[in-house]
Length: 199
Image (cartoon, rainbow, N blue to C red; front, side):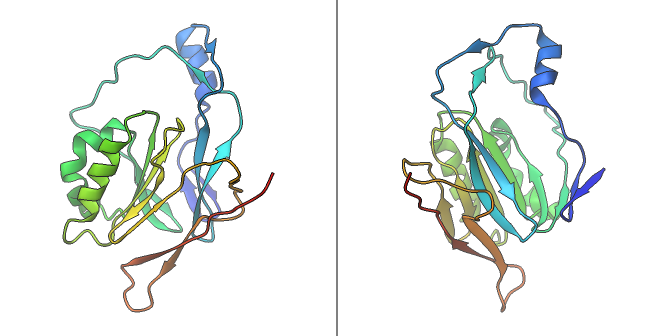
């Protein structure tokens, strides 16, 4: 286990080398019509989205098996306890996610996705955060395929980040800043800051 800026990182995987070893299939280069978008969680409790301008390749798609008893990891970070649910995990388990988060004391879930079907995620996240008793839960949705819909979803606040021409997001400048509410330690306030730059 490694510690980076106060956050504990359990494992770090190099997906490309793993994929090349596991498949022996040549990847087909495609036109760079997708973007790579990463979620950055800084040690000063800031969250931002960063676009990686590197070519994207798409391996052959295979059906995704959904485990009937999925296992998730809980990460202790400077912004609190968080977990990661990949794409379909959220959609298939959304009806019990809030109860599961409360049971394991997880405040934030990161959801990376690579699907053009963004509306189901927005609908399900909206349903969860509007439920009474879920005021302290936070969901960070990052559509790494560039189809839109990325943002931070909490009770009463929905901040979206959409990459547009003329907007550049730098990792050292946070779009969203977490800060504790002075009156209630269990509620999060979000101060949005979108970095506008002219090329």
